[in-house]
Length: 344
Ligand code: MRU
Image (cartoon, rainbow, N blue to C red; front, side, top):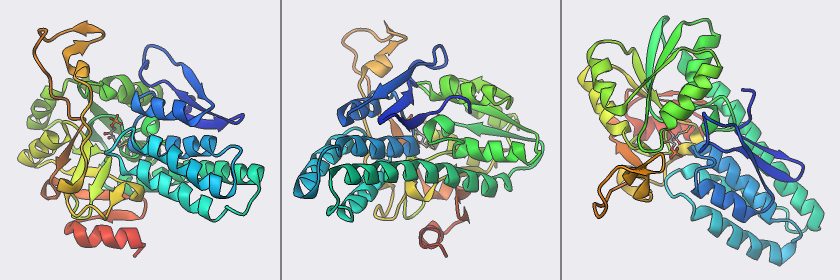
């Protein structure tokens, strides 16, 4: 991937502005944690693992010039700001907890060493995410025949992670293993992650991709044009219920209706055993204007409200398998996901 989703460079955090893709490739630079929080909130960067990495780098920025007790109180306020940005992806809270653990082990360090240690941890989170996606991709690639046509929703690609992607990582790994893979990308209303981002990165990578509007997925499934569905997840509960971009649940129901396997690519950092089921997962609601306007133009009569939940929950019974960096989890998920998390 020639353009990096996010990187730590020169004491700052750099991100490609995903709101502007595919029309323009603009890199934003953030030197303070409030800017990073705003970037997450406004979707300059999005996708569960990517916002985890961004939050970790944001914490590092916030820890400049502090040590001892003042480092703890600074961390609390930085973490509060970052945590409040987006509630559904557990990777964000996961990354903040990891940064807290690092801080607690570094409290005796003087200011500049403590800052360097926090930066190193944020970069480690970034690098581990890349390695996780490669491992997850190679496990998932074994599920795909050749040729295969994959239907995906939203963007669970390089742009949603430190690089390579989860759902798109599976596709990349299958292609790199010599399989002939083509992709249908759901457009993904209202933010268009599928048509703008998934199509952009797959096309750059020379993986054949065809965009469909979300309401066409049932038709391509009914025509027998899809070998399997693969999506990412923002948070998967202990029982295997999967929170992912709004529109994932109807896709899973349609896949079941047509006998097509429905796979979820889930790094272990997205699996939250503290949520017993999907009912425990907080679902973000975003601003109405994402629905009432299109490309800055009003498309709903004034005075008519819109409902804009950003994610839905696919019941575990519709999920054929969950692909992790440690292997493939199958039902019953309460058992298989707990074992994956423990490394057994
Ligand atoms: O609102 P977004 O664009 O952050 O939603 C992203 C998704 O729903 C992805 O599918 C999910 O985060 C997995 S990314 C590997």
